[in-house]
Amino acid sequence: MTTPDAPQAAISLDGVSRRFGDAVAVERIDLELAAGEFFALLGPSGCGKTTTLRMVGGFELPTTGRIRLAGKDVTSLPPHKRDVNTVFQSYALFPHLSVIDNVTFGLRRKAVAKAEAEKRAHEYLDLVGLSGFGSRRPSQLSGGQQQRVALARALVNHPKVLLLDEPMGALDAKIRKSMQLELKRIQREVGITFLYVTHDQSEAMSMADRLAVMNAGHVEDLGSPQRVYDRPVTQFVAEFLGTCNVIPVEADASGARLPDGGAVVADAGGTPSGAGWRVGIRPEKIRIDPLGTRPSGPNRTTATVTEVTFLGASTEARLVTAWGTLLQAYKQNAGGETTIRPGDEVDVSWDASQSFFLPPTDPSPAP
Ligand code: ATP
Image (spheres, rainbow, N blue to C red):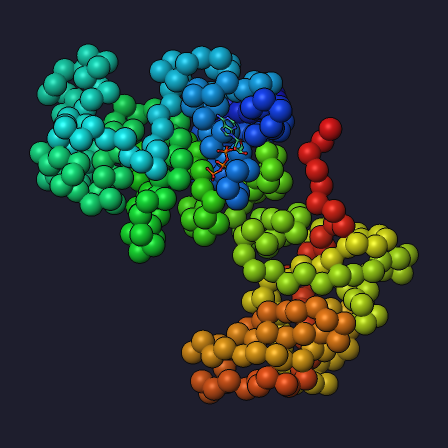
């Protein structure tokens, strides 16, 4: 809820749910997006991202809950009465209209004079790097260029909020990368709040100021990309955002222990107690040393190297601990050469500040 003193949220969802028959697509979501924020909704297929975005856009009504845009309750307003535009994966350009006519279409319907509409359209085509393309038809443009036209069209009337639903889904990997940088630049320049839906974690992490990871209709974690990557709250989030080593731990009053009895401490994730806890460590945070060379202390065990892959500057290693947990780690190559071989016994260690405890069962949404 917005308090009187808090800056007004650009978008606020308060206990929003959406059911389709018996199926729950979105379950009691609370979200607040600051004005000018680039916010990503991230999660696997079917987790409810698009339904959430469609409710903000007014294409779908919530079953319960309220949606506010800049403080105004828009829960049951139709799309055209909300100061929001949407960019879809399919671009939805008019094929029979030129680029300039596509971009001016909405302005002309709002009775903006032709010359003024075209002046604004040219500014936005400039912004998206398409000046000089105004007279082309969509069919004469590449997929990436069509996407830019869709973006210019959605921005030209300067909405308060832009919704983007997997807008790069149809682009190939290389163009996606360059569009990500472009989109971030454009968002900064126009200062409009972006709500961006994607299942691609690298896309969300590279562009978003903050992101929410959704799972089965609820928001499981929410924060800056770095916080959510470095200190995820559940194993689902840890693994959705990238590779994560997950080691079981046992905990009692004396602290947490690895299956071989070694002490474990982690700066994030709370204090384990009882069975079923795990500790998570990203592969790049695991250190590999020759057997017996690490001083004793917490967060230390031994493992056998099962596989090595030479990556140039480093080597990717697969390892197995004495109790059978598989691990992945990287080791810098001294003098450009791999110094570890399959079958080697090695010391494995990590810092408390670079690991996080994971609770036994991922928290479910509040009843
Ligand atoms: P994707 O990445 O595949 O687009 P998503 O995370 O955007 O997935 P949604 O499209 O929001 O997921 O769908 C969430 C759930 O709601 C899914 O189980 C989906 O089948 C269901 N759903 C969505 N729209 C409808 C509808 N109109 N009728 C019935 N079920 C629906």
